[in-house]
Length: 202
Image (cartoon, rainbow, N blue to C red; front, side, top):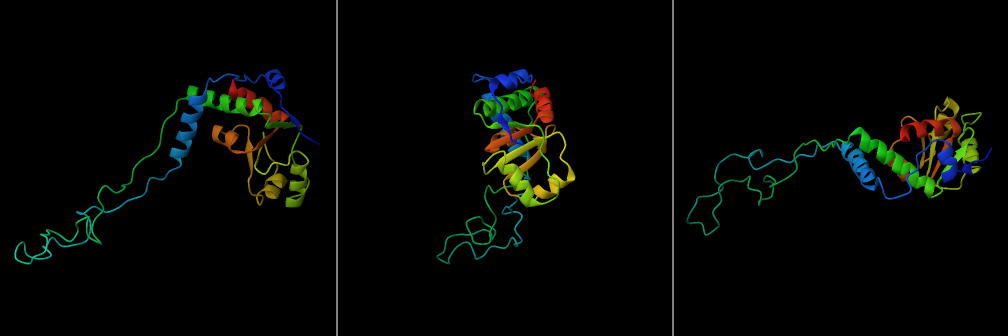
């Protein structure tokens, strides 16, 4: 069982609206940036000079010491003092509307199809939960190092066999996103999943 390259003509026959011009490039950028921003926890935090645990007593008197005047030990210019303009907890999330997300997904899928990086196979599953068997099946389809496998539903054996393989990602056609379509060298899609992708890209 081997995979065949999904051509533009075959993609159109599968009802995938392939974008062959520059339309959608900005949508891809906006969608991917939003995905990456939404993963940020935004928990970085530093203390200001008002929050550092120091008393308000002057380190030394104002005049007569020969040293520069100093009002408090929590000054940002002192070691152990507060941080000026440091990070505080914040929300980095960005919103992208559904039309932009759909356009970005269709553009990313189209770009990979045009590049010849999408491979189609009838099915992808192993008979036993063994990594060696999984790799043998994978190498019968492609020699790429980073591979995205897209199916409508992966059986338990395949999931167990693939969990120790780095740089290989298993995703259903319903959950794969724009960023994942762009990240991997090759994309292996089953015929069932291709129909679902066509529905999402319409």
